[in-house]
Image (cartoon, rainbow, N blue to C red; front, side, top):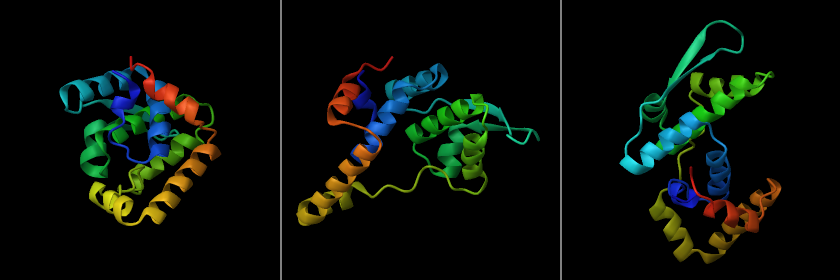
Length: 160
């Protein structure tokens, strides 16, 4: 399976490219859960445990809770968990604090995608707005150092 086949949950090109990079580099635990999700069409109930950065206990984060209680899509939940695992391994715990803080105040990565029907209406009925939207997305890609050649190569890589 190619990485691009895992990105149907992301509509904006910038999001697809960033998700593709994250999928390529995610931990084996999360890769296994992504493979299960794509093959079976159901979320594997994965849980991780990390210590709070302040040293006062720990938190258990489950893929099911992220989907059911925080409104994340299955793929967003798995990638969020991978980000938490990576941030936990770093000496500087500020990124981990930020990620865990999103859960405690309900500010998670999921920001509510624009419905597919609305995106299609904009594309079909407002070509000037759609063109500007595409231009902004390309600028964002460039800001993050993402070239079209790199993007195309990444999308064609096999998911292992």
